[in-house]
Image 1 (cartoon, rainbow, N blue to C red):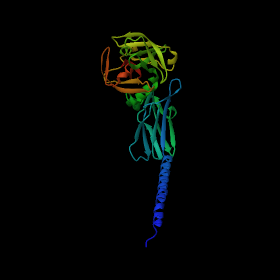
Image 2: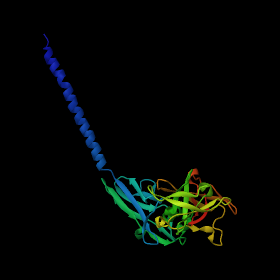
Image 3: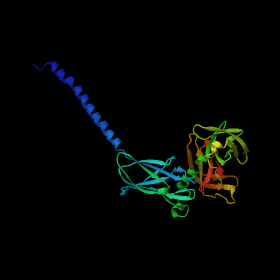
Image 4: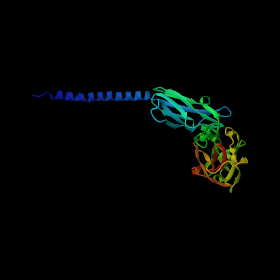
Length: 308
């Protein structure tokens, strides 16, 4: 006669409890493994800043950096700083060299960085690149500076210099951009953007808009000039107008740049080249969104030569 059914049921009844304990142990091991992995995460955070003419630190956007391990086991990784001048890279623990892919051209100077740093396991390491630890020389005096002309080096300098001078414009029917041309509160933009409106709104931050009057407009030349209270514009530098001098600021095949203003208070720079030009028009291959009408076109030296 076989064992009582109750004994069999008793043994079977214990199995789910054992399985639950085993599953819980496996889950605990997995969680512990994830925790260890998270603790061992290794991040290098790079922050790039330079001082402007007033000795104020300015973040350097769109600066390309090359990251190489020491001794080298692969080609350098290339990263580009964000609008706030920072970049984050996930790395294995070790010793690394961080260097500029091209010099930064800013306010007549060329900045180039090359730093070696240990990146330990399990924490975020901060590397600050400033004028103090850069190789600095007069722009154009070295071969590296010359080769950087019209590239991301010029683009970074343009954003540092002029991003606060370009502002979003709200009209009754459209949204576009304008740029400060005079410290007394004058802003230039596209006449087609303004249309028949006598006033528009100028956005200076993600939460602030200010009324501006249309004080002049030329339909044929497609230019309008606005005026607003200059106090809120105190931090915006008037741009340099390229045609104010006797020389022609651009020629065919020159590099050209547009700074576009977003309503989210983010500035975007696009680049291209001059294809053709005449007394009223500069044709380029820059792609600008339709709702960014009125953005300024800059030369590599920072002069505004046209309105999109």
